[in-house]
Image (tube, rainbow, N blue to C red; front, side):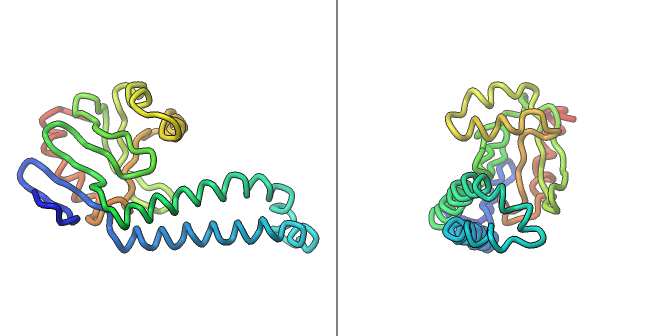
Length: 189
């Protein structure tokens, strides 16, 4: 298959790229959050002194929000801009399994025999494909650093591995429909 940076489908393989429009929009939103948080960091005293309404609740915890928010959204912005400039497939689905590179905490290859259940769900209004592995620990052991921490946070969720719609330029229903041929062969629930 050629390097067109667009979804490619053959009989036995689907390679999905993230939508450029969505990636650009998310980059802009993430950068806007960084800008607002940096502004808030330089204006903490003014925000605290003039607090009214909801800001009276936010002002005392603003330092914590800044310490978490600035690095998080900065990392998101860098990651999204990198993915925009140098696109990589978000997903590859073939007879081996699902290669998930759809998020910051991507797990890589999920072999069909490692999947207990797969399905669609919605989180904060965004469609997701959720994957329940038969054993989550091997995925954690394959990762290092921040990826392991991000994945550990998902360990006890209904779907510990998630593929968001914004990681795919095609509807997730189409992705799941393509995967059905392998899901049916492997008798995955």
